[in-house]
Image (cartoon, rainbow, N blue to C red; front, side, top):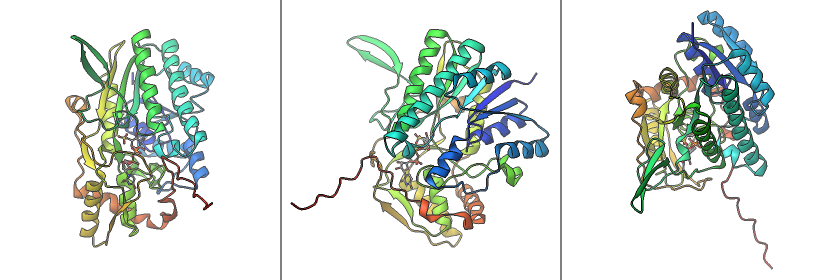
Amino acid sequence: MAQRVLVLGGDGYLGWPTAMYLSRGGYRVAVVDNFAKRAWELELGVQPLFPITTLHQRVRAWREVSENEIEVFVGDLTDYRFVESVFRSFRPEAVIHYGEQPSAPYSMIDVRHATYTQANNVVGTLNVVFAIRDIVPDCHLVKLGTMGEYGTPDIDIEEGYLTVNHDGRSQRFLYPKTPGSLYHASKVHDSTNIHFACRIWGLRATDLNQGVVYGVETDESAMDEQLATSFHYDEVFGTALNRFCVQAAIGHPLTVYGKGGQTRGFLNIRDTMQCVELAVRNPAEPGEMRVFNQFTEQFSVSELADRVKAAAEHLGWSVEVVHAPNPRKEAEQHYYNAKHSKLLELGLQPHYLGEELIDSMLHKIERYRDRIDPSVLVQNVRWVPAEPEKTPA
Ligand code: USQ
């Protein structure tokens, strides 16, 4: 009998490719989505670069290409009655939880977007935790957290936990968190709640503290245009490397924010697929909240921009890197060393960021150049609102 895996946020940039990857890998897959991301796109006037069909059309296209079925549940994770009905009907053995508002800038627009992000993410996750406790207590929760939960401390970042020696005694704690946005903070709250659920109710969970994902496609999404993933390049939903590749494709300067020494963990979208499957295949023990730091390489933002510039110039494109004013409040030069060995120990085979990989991204993006809207590259979401101009007395 195939293992039943429920993918929450199954219409998104990572959720949809994950659903196809697992479906192809022999799992019985169902996806849950409320299409909130499509509503946020309308709200901000942005679109994914590749045309995206409806979820139902994607599922039909997948059936034709692969002869595999993906089940669909449409509804909101903050509605417990909906969550309960999905868990009672599908009875998942593993849940992969991407079903959250994923953008740091979106959470920083104003109070409404901040409270929405935290309520949506924290309440949705709590509902999932309760549904597991009360309906399928042996189910393994694989939760997408973020490396941004840790911030940029001046000591090495461990995988989830830190042993503190204090006045001759010692205790292992969840690693101290210093999130860089109210979105990242929502993931910290989730981690606290999931840790609680494992300690108190014996649930099993893996918190995947994922770095910044890049990439235009996976083996499955490349099988048919209708299976494309929802790739963003605008300021709010686009992530650094994806944005730089799109900027290079239209001759827009690559926007390194501030000094550019901001260092993060990065991974290819294909490695996200591998990592979540490795977590599903090697579940946590009852009562355990495992934490894996899910990235393959560390880069500063400047290094990333330089790599994209070099690859684009080899294609004969002329590319400039600019140091744009940083809309965020973050350290622009700092120590960064995050451990990330646990997924490698489970068998992760990384796709590293070589020039060939950047080339393939640039080539694919170039084919959709006409759909790029330069006006959404900058949307002026600021971490600290600009001071109102003082009128002279
Ligand atoms: N940055 C630039 N120029 C740009 C865009 C971003 O210099 O044009 C810089 C940002 O200032 C930041 C770094 O690049 O220092 C990363 O920003 P990002 O927008 O690529 O990623 P971030 O906001 O951190 O969030 C993304 C995903 C989020 C995920 C997170 C992983 O949107 O869902 O949780 O990456 S991590 O960064 O490890 O926390």
